[in-house]
Image (cartoon, rainbow, N blue to C red; front, top):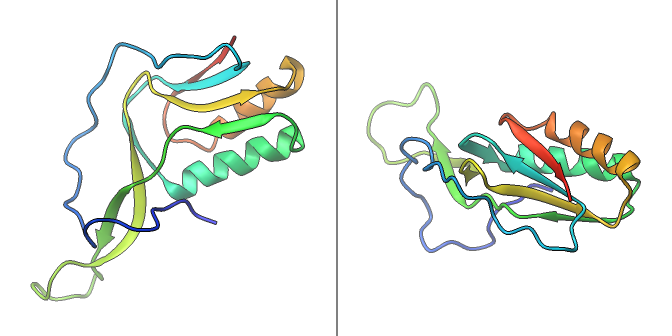
Length: 137
């Protein structure tokens, strides 16, 4: 099932302009975590990409350990039909995206050993369009 908000303040939003700001600081990593997936570039991830990465990681670790997703797609992107004439309002919501800034932590995986956790995160990050790093703590 795709990740999207249950309820929003407005039905449709303006399109995001430009990429998110790049921050030099990384998010605090807690002592409990073993592995963290951190973005090295800014961009947008939609709900399908996040869900594909989650499924791939869970499939590789055989549902052991704990996987935390720290991003949520809450920006609505709408599309009008290609043959629609000008006017007649804004198009339907097509998908939801999450704004990712460089240095932001995307996933935490803990409670699992390195020989099983690292390949799982590698296969999960292959589903993401951004450059990421996997840190082992």
